[in-house]
Amino acid sequence: MQKVPMTKPGAAALEAELDDLKRVQRPKITAAIAEARAHGDLKENAEYHAAREQQGFNEARIKDIEGKLSNAQIIDITEIENTGKVIFGATVELYNLETEATVTYQLVGEDEADVEKGKISVSSPIARGLIGKLEGDAVKVVTPGGEVEYEISKVEYR
Image (cartoon, rainbow, N blue to C red; front, side):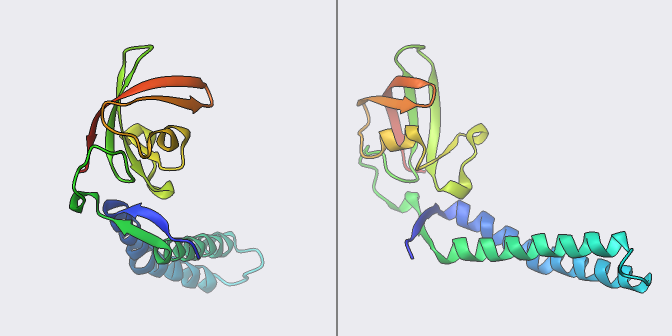
């Protein structure tokens, strides 16, 4: 199977979620099922059915996270020498040549992406247009909203 890039903090967040699902949520759900069973008739027991559904969601999420972590290629960007080149995990400051606005993005894995926190997926149109470029380069990026021209002001590996 193909390895999927993931930052070290992204992998740590998934591992923490997995630990919570297994050690905290799973026992809570098991207790809720046992309590609902004690109420009697399972056919018309809404609490039982809700707890079983929650158990299904929890187990599916556990399998999903385990699969993602098993296929992850964890990259610690802080251990890579900064050459000014945009690579996976880099934090890039962009200057929009049309609007004169500055934005900062970190290029992360699919599961880590959160635009509100300045983290964009490495497979997003902006990230694909930036990968391999150098600090100071002008880049035209094709986005769903149209073509945008940026200048790469700064590239950091943090």
